[in-house]
Each structure stands twice: as C-alpha cells, then as structure tokens.
Length: 347
Image (tube, rainbow, N blue to C red; front, side, top):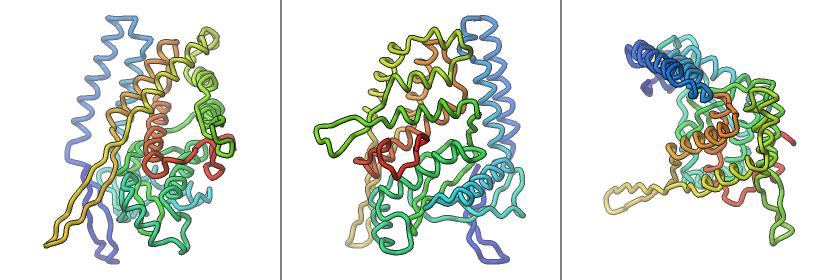
C-alpha cells in the first residue's frame, strides 16, 4: 500500500489516504497458494516435519497477509482500538479518526497525524519539555513510553485485538505529548484459554530481585515461572506438558534471553544544513531482522520440548521485544516489572 497526504474538499481537513497497489491481492493469492501447497508437500514427503506445523504456519501467514489487502478489515481494527481507548480510560494515547464514507476495500481515509517515531529521543524530549505543566499526561520521555505500554498491554486482554506491528513508524509521539498508534493492518487476538498463562508470563518477566542498593529493587526474569507459563501456552496435551523438563527449559530460556539482551539499538544521526547553520538530530533504530530471529529462536527452543506456540504468541513476543528496545531508548532506568505506573497483568 501507499499513503498520500490530502485535504478534504468539504472541510479543508488534512487526511492520510491509504491506497492498495492495483492487482496486489491477486499476486499475493497466487504466491501464497504456492507456499501453502509446497509446505503440505514437504510435510507429506518428510513426515518428521509435521511436528513443526509447516502447513499450519503457511496457512496462518496466508490468512494474515490476505487480510492486509482488504482495508475494510483494517478499518474495523482501527475502530475497535479507538473504542477500547475510550472505554478503558487509558491516558496519553490516540489513533487516527477514520472517515468511513470514503473507505472501501482498496482505499482508507483517516485523520492525518503529525508526530515523531518513538525512537527519536531528542525530539520527544523537546515535545515533553514544551508541554510540561499543561494539561498532558506525559511530562518526560519515560511517561510517553509508559502511556504507550499501558495502552498496548491493556489491549492484549481487554480489546478485541492488539496491535501486532508496533515498530517505531507505527508509534508516533504527537506535539501534545500523546502517542498515536497507526496502521492496524496486522493485529493479534489472544484466546481466552491462554489469558491465565499470559498473565503468568508477564508476571515472570517482572519479578523483583535484590540489588546492592536495597532501596532500589531491580527486575529480573523468573525463568522457571516463564517456562511453566510457556508450557501452558504451547503444550498440545497433558502428556506433552508432563514430559517437559522445566529446569532444563528454564536454562535454555535464560541463555536465549541473554542473547536478546545483547541486541543494542543503533544510533542514526541526520544533519540538515541551511545557509551557515547546521542542525543535527539523533535517533535510535531497532534491528527488526534481529527481533524476527529472536522470535524464531524462541519457537525453536519450544519445539525442542515438543511445544507449538500459536501464531498470536509469536506476534505478542515480537511486540514485547519492540517495547523492550523503546525502554532502553526512552527510559533506560525504568523497572518495568516493579513500577506501579505500569499495568502488568498481576496488578
């Protein structure tokens, strides 16, 4: 899809117009049908591959991508998120207002929002400094992040779906200090049967541990609790669940997450010269390929113990890793699991 900026003739209001490229749906259908068929053939020729659920994964990818080429479904997702924000009372967060009378399968028209990516620390500092003391919920970059994180965490359990593509381009800090969630082409839905396990998973990532300074507890991952919650999510039956060596699984998870911690955001400096003056802005970017590998490694680790995680779980973990990177950028001292301002599932 391509997005254009336009102005409504009737009101003069500035809007964003998202348009699908001609023929993209047909092209995707052909390519995805081939991939799905190839996965089924591979499973037939190599029965041991069935435990990897290749055909199921391919079918999930096909369903997800074809949903993205019907902008009417994205409109439904956007409206659902806006309804969730209004009903839940989360603060400091918004999403574009859609203009439904102009929307169709191939065209979507919505409010145009000006903002900066959530990785642009300097710009967000300037925004929060300019609105500090006014009627805003974000006084600094840390509170901007907390507002976005609370809205996303709440949507996992309270909304019809959660935003499943929260890369920096889809989370914008607005001039008033709010965060705008945009682009609802990819969403995930959590089955009620896994809510309890997900709450346990979030809780395991927020365990308090003592530090050299007793007045300042830190957070760490309770890997055994994480292992047990992942077994509850990924075990196909009680026999599989009972067969998992929780201690060994916990050790593998600790090794995996240690490698994830080693992934550092990169710094990008952009210079803009005008006459005799030169301005420079620094922002930090997140390596999306590295995050994809991390999600894949987690799935492989689970497969080692006979666990099969649903597609939504992979989407959920990837978004959590995005927010981990934003925390390093905007609030490196934030203790996500211990801070009472963050609405983790167990609070």
